[in-house]
Amino acid sequence: MKVCLICNQIAAWGKIGGFGSATRALGRGLAERGVEVTAVIPRRAGDGQEPVENLDGITVYGTESAETFFSGRIFRRIDADVYHSQEPTVASYLAQRSMPNKIHIVTCRDPRGMADHMVELRYTNLRRRLLFPVTWAYEAAPWVKAAVRNADSVFMPAPSCLTPRIQKLYGRSVQPLFVPSPVDVPESPPVKDEEPLVIFVGRWDHRKRIERFFALAERFPHIRFMAIGRAHDSAYDARLRQAWEHLSNVEMPGFVPRFGPENLNSIYARAWILVNTSAREGLPYTFIEAGAWGCSILSSLDPDHFARDFGYYVEDDDFAKGLAWLLESDRWRARGRKAMEFVRANFSEERSLDAHMKAYVELCGQKSGSEMGIASGKAI
View 1 (cartoon, rainbow, N blue to C red):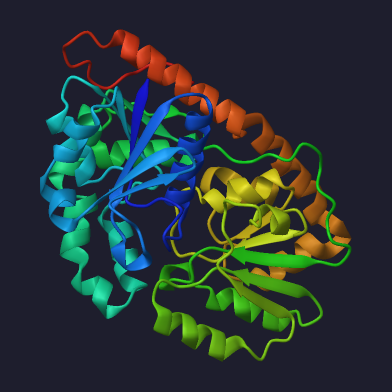
View 2: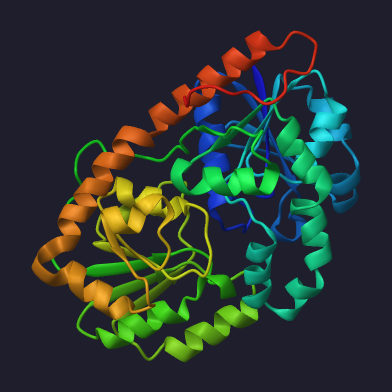
């Protein structure tokens, strides 16, 4: 079987984000199971990405701007059995138009309507505001929505919060199936640091509102904090570091990779609490990763009740109140243990890969030369 993953990023060549981490984890796992895996992403030449790369057994094709928006030639060249978009974009539409007799799947990780795009515009810089028409054409134009409606199947990783958003955006005819994203699950419960360690993991972009994390650290000078990541905007990154470098209880190690021998898991294993301060999210990949390692979640967003069930849901931006509550009587520990059990049961790499392989095989078997339409039925 040959599977082509389509995404706007993969976790390499300077790109930071949950979509990219999920894409690389899925591609690597499929390759280890003997699947021939390719990936098509916009090329990041400035970060050293060549037109064709090999990454963890995945052949990665980088497309230039014109090809990304207008040409399906790369998909004809790859000639895969399954084209699986990790978030719908214009590339999903081009793949369907170019290879109509193949299987086409779309995973909706963070469906965004106009209100969501307005939040993005509110928390961004001038350059990205000016580029909004391009972003809209790539992610939200009518042909992108058509690609979701015409897919053979639509997956999503968070049924409670994403199903209504998907159907509102693409129509009730779309019946998304829960298929988990793959994450590493430790073989045994991790040994946590003896003293509290509170972490932030992600891009330091405006929408993430990381200033609230630093303000929280300022309120708790006796507790260790670690702000992991960096901003894509180097000037904004530098301003943040300069503004908060006076906090002696905060480490800022920069970007820590999800893959490789020195990776995020070693930090998740030690940490007590993961903080998310974002203005908007789908189901953050960091929630699942951190939960796998027994971290409690402190968040002002509550997708699929992850914060409410496995930590503290901050409804009024009072992160200090939430942190104090989790630390009192070691409440974080029971919540983190509950998260670990949930992720192990639902999001382990083995379960995720089994679900993806089962879907690929079934859809390929059902394809008989005519368009099947959007699959419906029970969740995998």
